[in-house]
Amino acid sequence: MAEVEARTVLWYMTFMGFIVNYMIRINLNITIVDMIAGKGEAPVPLNHSLDHLLAAASNASDFASLPAVSERFTLERWFLDWANIGYDREGFHWNEKQQGALLGSFFWAHWTLQIPGGILATKYGTKLIFGWSNGIGVFCCFLIPIVSYWSYTGLICLRVFQGWITGLAWPSMHVLTAKWIPPNERSKFVSAYLGSSVGVALFYPIFGYIIDWTSWEWVYYICGVVGTVWFIAWQFLVYDTPAQHPRIADTERRYIEKSLGASVQNSSPGPTPWLAIATSRPVWLNVVAQWGGIWGLFTLMTHAPTYFRLIHHWNIRATGFLSGLPHLMRMLFAYGFSILADYLLRTDRLSRTNVRKLATFICCGVKGLVVLALAYFGYNATAAILLVTLATMFHGAVSSGPLASMVDLSPNYAGIVLGVSGMIGGMPGFISPLIVGHLTQGNQNIEAWKKVFLLSSAMLTGSGILYVLFSESTLQPWNSGCHALPDAGLKELQTFDARLEDEEEKKPLNQSNADHVGTDTELETKTKAI
Figure 1 (cartoon, rainbow, N blue to C red):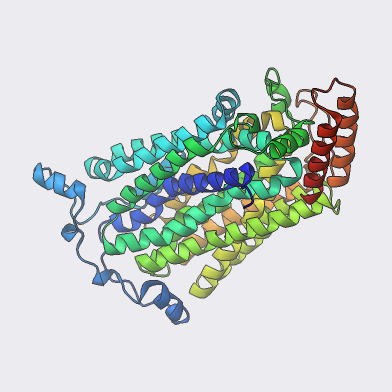
Figure 2: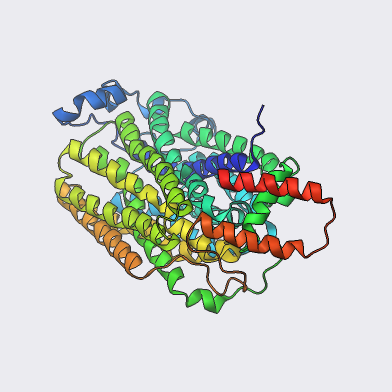
């Protein structure tokens, strides 16, 4: 039986880790639909063109058929009743601005730990930083229901803390990627980051059904349990470098170290070149691309349940199912496009810079045009779900664009570069909800949402154009003076490896020539296979 490669296990654990990371951040987006007072009113009849689709998604049930909130058992309601503490039995009376603030509060401090996340992972390892960042965020899920009944301000504070601590996760992962993944496999591996999309696609409909069957509080119980299981597995299966892994095959370890030897230093690369990073044009263009992409993504992801519920009058199960569908398509597109991107690099069809530009053009430029169409045709329910799905799907190319480009620029400081990008590029996560809340305050109609989508389209297309015109994805001189990584693909990498082999042959050997030749033959076969 063929042994499973350590990189394969790492891909799946990273994939699941980002599912958990996004499960944490999006659960409130859909539970808030059921938490607000007055949500039990029956929705307006659905657009006829969606009847069959919604019937499959929700079995034609609506809120009128749901039991009253006060009839549902939860631990929090039982405790509050037992302690004779009053609470809002019919739901919380939060207006649109308060809801917008609550939805955006996760990101208020999220950006502040982006750079520290990269620095801490570089020093202490991704296993510790990514694992505990998600783990503490998961623990907060258990507290959200009781804090919600206690105080709106308390809930805001808890969400701010939850967003703040999970801000360490994304930049820390790039440190692991730089130490484990050969250059021409990065697009495919970074697609594991899009486990975030699967988290949205999977848990939106699951949360919708949980709310339908029980109550919104149970969403947070399940988030806590699922996240805890992942956390335990992460501690036992993931290691910071191939050299630390006790079960990795020797051939795989040598192949990884050989492939990365040109650009990654296992020892400390020296002081962080902050000035060079802060004045690097490629770094800033990645920041710009992330700003536009995240603005568009979070606007659709955070507000889709509210938009579909209030504008198109979908019930909770249909809202969950159809809000999650676009993110499933995003992951599938990301994985498929990443295979294409790595193929283009291996065969030298496009340079590394042009592959990243192509991916960014799709995830920002093309997506911006689709969101523009949504602004003008979103009044139609069928067009709305189709355009939201396409827009979110095209954003999947980000794994082969800006996300992969940051590792290309500087493997030694990839976590810090992503931290800089996340700190600035992540700000739309809380700015967008505030603007949406302002535009839709007492004004939940198609014209208000048209303005929301027009603004998103401008952010997306503008950032995409700037990136395509001025960006590059070559190894930067400030990456501690390492050998420059070939810009194209496999041919240059093989030539480069051959030169390194010639240098190594001049060094004393600790094993027989026969063993040396046999190992080199295995590595050459592995390199060609990949």
